[in-house]
Length: 374
Image 1 (spheres, rainbow, N blue to C red):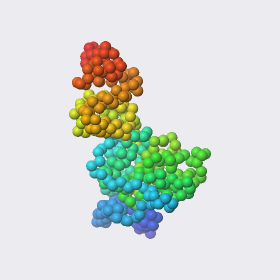
Image 2 (cartoon, rainbow, N blue to C red):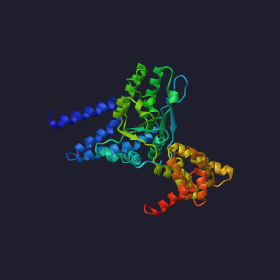
Image 3 (cartoon, rainbow, N blue to C red):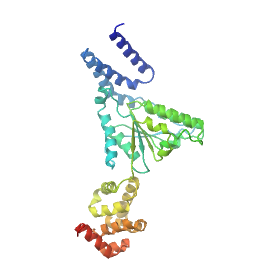
Image 4 (cartoon, one colour):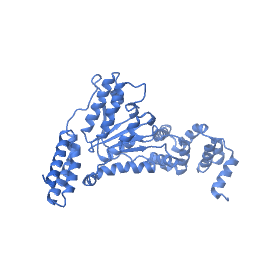
C-alpha cells in the first residue's frame, strides 16, 4: 500500500469513527484539517470540502433549534430541569473590570469568527468556569454572552434537579447535559459547587462522587457547537480535577471604586443629571456592595423619588444619612469632602450628615484644591 493510500485509509477510518461514536460535532474540524492537507495536491477537493463545512456550520444553529427535542423533566415532580431564556439583543453590556471584559469579549469574538478558527484547525473555547463572590456579574455575563451570540441560555434549575434519591439526581443532571449537547446554546450550570464537590469529601456518598466523574467527562467532550459555562461562589468546594477540565477560568473580583462609579452612572440613566458629585458620593457609600446590590439600590432610590415626589438627589441624601454610621472613619472623611463639593450641600450640612467637623472638611478641601503644597 502506498503512503498516500495509507493516509487516505487513516483519514477515512477517523471520519467513520467520529460519525459512529456520537462525535459528529468534531467532523467539521477534522474535514477542515483534511482540506488543508490536500490544498497543494488537490486544490479542487480542498475547496469543495471547505465549502461543505462552511455551509454545514451556517445551517447548524437553525437545524439544532428545530430539532423539537422536549426539555427534560424530573420523573417525579414533572418540573422542567432547565430554564430557557431567549437571547435579548438589546441587553446592556455588564460593567466589567478591564481584565474580565477582555476575557468575556474574547469568548464572543471566537464564536463570531468560528469559521476562521476551524479553517486553521482550531476550536473556539467550549467551556468556561466563572468564579467569584455573589452579585459580581457571573450570571449576567453568561446571559450577555448568549444574547450577543443570538443563542438561548439554558440554566440548570438545581431546585428541580436535586432529588432525595441520589440516583435520580444523577439521572437528572445527565438528562440536562445530554439535552444541551444537542442544542446550539449556552448552558449555564449555576451554583456548580453543589454538583461538583470534592470527591475526597468524606460526607459525600458514592453516587455523588460518580456524578462528579461524569461531569468531568462531559466537560472534556463538550461540542464546539455550544458553550458550557459553570459558575460558583465557593471555589474551595470544587473537586480539584474540575479546574483542569475547563478551557477558561474567569475570576470575577468584587468591584473596585471606579467600577462602582461606572455602574452607578449607567444605572442612573436619564437621571444622571443629578451630577457627577453625587455619583462620587454614592460610590463611597456603596463601595463594598456587589453589582447586584448596587443595581437594586439605585432602582430603589429612583422608585422612591417618584413615589415621594422628591428630586433624586434629595432621595440620595436621605440614603446617605442612613448609611453613614456604617462607614469607617477614613471613608467618613472622604464622604464629608465629597459632600461639601455638591453645590446644594454646604460644609455645615456635610459636617452634620457625617459627624466630621467643619474645620477638618475645610482643611481637606483646601488640600485637595491646592495639591500637596496648597
